[in-house]
Image (cartoon, rainbow, N blue to C red; front, side, top):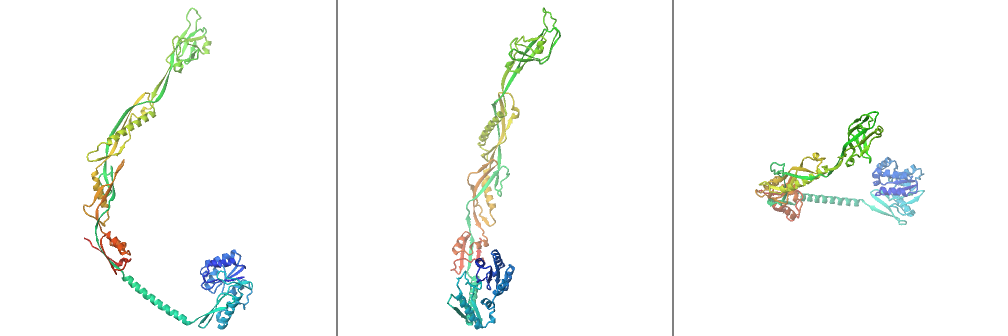
Length: 562
């Protein structure tokens, strides 16, 4: 088992280090009264956790009941003496041993015995010490546990003897402190306290009375640096408004119209059917032959034709000397185009049904009329291209009109010109699909341009500047000057004019503001600050003080008004 005596100024880290360096499984930590470790339960909880982690049995020893209570609240056992802790940990303690002697109160031992015992104990400890100090603690092994002897003290009457341990063989050193020393310390302490109180009183009186400053200020007038002001002209502003910084602008209407003839680029192919007549002849002596509408006949080279009407061939009498029955029927080529054209007697092939009924066919005249033609058509793309071309012409016309002189008394700004939506005549919906080589299109619209009465700029800027000043600023009558300050910024619906305004003003400064500006400042700096307010006189008392008082109550400010 190890017993460790901690110093007053040991930290929790020192105690944890002792636990980590312990070679035994049972450890006793002895805390002196007033130890830093004993000031909070968290320290004991850390020690308990460290002991649990390392499998140690830990006991705390302290003469302070509150420290013992804190240790117990953290789950540790606490004791008044080392002997009690050793018994709790299961160690047989010899009450005559030096450890038992430490748990005996000094009042039960005669003074001479206490001094001699302390000296002998100290000498024995110094002689038996074989290990060096570790973190300010003298360590030795005895009867299976470690003991770190601390300074032994004995008291007798009014004399206190302190026995301090030294190295081996050096013995002990006894220091005597008598009651006269304490009286001298108390006397000088009282004298020092009285002198300090007197000095503090003198300083406080000086603080209340010194230094003081008197400032006399005559506010003067000054020319303000040019102030940037923006005045906006807009068509939705009926009258000039100085508070808002706006003036009216007017739309000037410009009627525009452009027309043109444009080519159609679409293609439309037209095919017609060839038409003619064929004659059907019958040699059927048994029954009449009906030729239905749509009966197909053809030429030897494969050109087909269909009948457009129904026809009936009567029965043939068989008389070879007389004419055979025949009928003429209109026909149309089955395909459009010039391929349907056929020469005279070119049609000779009939359907097999008619051939079996001994019916023949021929065309006594030429079959013709089949043709192929290509016509141009207006497309949507044609109309859109025409619209864009007309729009470009209208835009050019607007720029030319906007550049002309404006209405008398007004300034025209061509950069503000804008174009309305063009109206097309005829509409593209009506043109698209028409068969034509060319088409005509007209675009009409109304453009606008802003015009401004610039004589309103300067008075509006002056009003805007004056209305923006605070109540503490007095402007000398007739001193406000406004002028143009750069090129205007033009937009389609507004024009912004940059203006510069200056004036001569008298500033009525607030006394509290002035005092705050100069309080605590060096005298020279305070005079520079005051010169910005007008003509100022600064008087310090006493005159050798370099800075104005930081307390504004010790600064007298007099502002003289005309």
